[in-house]
Length: 37
Image (tube, rainbow, N blue to C red):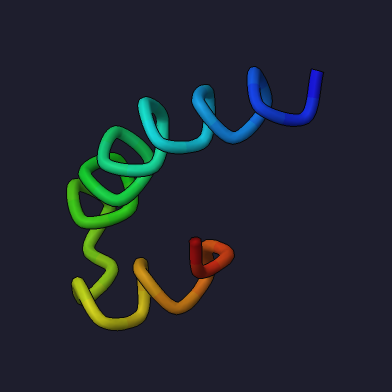
């Protein structure tokens, strides 16, 4: 399930960044809130 979880993160990460940016978060801040892959 580890690989499956990483796949989900890869799919969701850009969406989460987009959502954070939509709420006024700077891109660097949004990316910093998420775990590095």
